[in-house]
Image 1 (cartoon, rainbow, N blue to C red):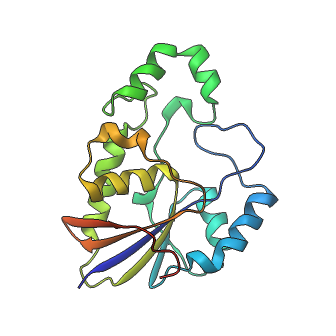
Image 2: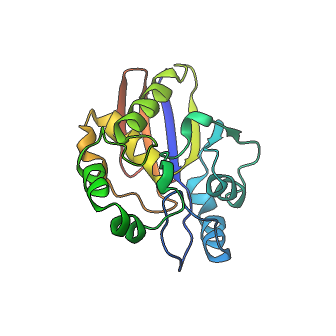
Length: 187
């Protein structure tokens, strides 16, 4: 049986400075999520990442009964968590440059992009073949990692995958073989 997995990127705060580790959602972001609800209905088993943004997005989408899945957590940014890109660039320019080009680098003491990609690939491959429809609200980095896994793309491609807040990405397949399904909204 083919698994149909819909990954919904968590809503993002509006009008605030972007920080590693994210920020809580404002009312405008929650309104966007409530409005998007019917278009990203998902189905079957519903998961969410453990972050506050994933929790708030799932609630705004009216996804009752979502299962918190620790494997779907955001990229661990270590000591950079809560800092802005400008703050890190000013304080650790060489470390930031290394992290941006080397997927195995984790100068912040957290998780490398490659480690995230391997974690998400393992979660995808562990989904039971009879899972049917599965949906999850996750952070942008998790969607990126899942897309790379589905396409067997190199980890260096991570920064080339743009995922908008509330975008829905559908993957179909099963352990070891995944496909990216384009234009799947409302299916």
